[in-house]
Length: 309
Length: 259
Image (tube, rainbow over all chains, first blue to last red; front, side, top):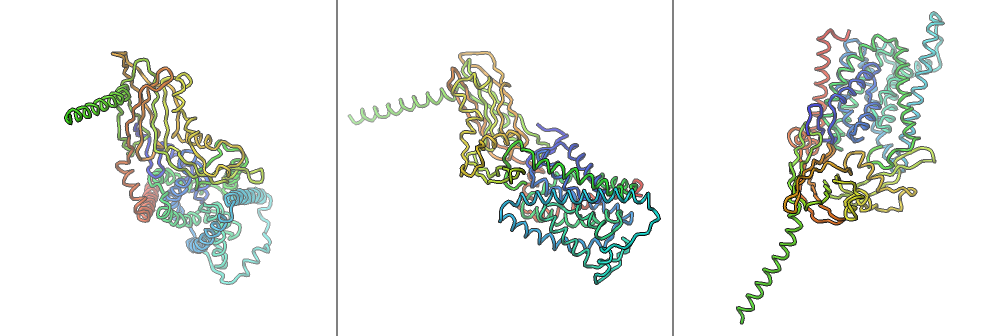
């Protein structure tokens, strides 16, 4: 029983509809291009719903994000939206933080109930990040209309970051910051991403916007640049240790998501920074709502294979 | 005298051999079964397979077809409530005697086939599954039944009625043919296609044909690379992804660019 529309995936151990997988890649790629997030937090659950084992879905998704973020980074580079210096510093912090996070998760698993802690961290992080971004963007949109000419008073946080040592100029972002800031915040995101098992784009983007005070359009390109390297590392590690990367699945997703990412970069350029933030916040809140529902509603089958969440 | 005793011994052995052969022949001959194909190629376009099964059964028999894999151990987690509120994967459970696949197809509903047919139902399969440390299970949940439900969702366990076509009776036997659909989630390995003939509530014939599912072409090559040269496979996957991303990026640039 063969069909041109279906492709057999040897690592996932199932066949999939080519158009459905490419379409899924296209939609997630579009969001990735607009918001600068890898889309793993959306793609992996959708792949699981299509019959792909959870471990294969997560690992193959990392593989496709490599392609999509290459395409997306290229598009943003052309638009001058990538702060390479900031991206490299965040990446260094992220690699160190990720290594620490992996050790933390090992300890949590030994203590038991790690799955519970992971899920709760996920929901709380998504809720906090999404909620804060939503409210802040809404306020910013209202203020910009009412007090367009009003000058800003320097906050205590701004005074604090100006007082840190090793200040450096980040020309692409148009800001001056201590080297410690991207290193430490990159490390923090790395720890959270490792605990939650995601690329960390949806945490990194708000960190760049609110804590590093980078302009939204540079945030998107720089986030994609950083995600590219994180996912290269994950793909190789997963292939070598767990054999869970399905290259054919990744390739199908990649075709869809790369095209989607290119279109997303163009759409993102047309949107105002606050509009981008409020859309991303809504997306994060929707995913949080779905996760919360999954945690509270009784599952259809009360058994799961070992290894999946 | 000696020759007489030897002749008697040889004669007895021959008689016994003939009786045994006749018995075996009666069990086998009633269901001379052909299965096509006996090797399922799992190539790029594999999306499950249809096995064509035909043969002869005693006239007036009903048929149960089964496609089964070797039983194995499954390690699972039972979902339970944490703090009486949140559903999480909790108790680790080990199931023994779980067939990788069990597809059952009967010519008529099982409750009309008599007691012997019960042996081949999924419910009997559920009873055969053993749970290690059953005391660890939360509450009074029937965990083998949950396992079966999960396998049914994956298409790896199925119980269906119909799809068996009988030909005209000749000489006390009746030809039959049936199509048995095998799911795309099948793993490569060895399986058995079984045909059971039932009449008046008892088994009147049984036959089994081995069927092999094997990866061929690109899926076989990729599977070999992924499991035997994991790091190289990962590096290649990354390189192809980067090249693919760059290529698509360039295509878009050529069509007017990102500006």
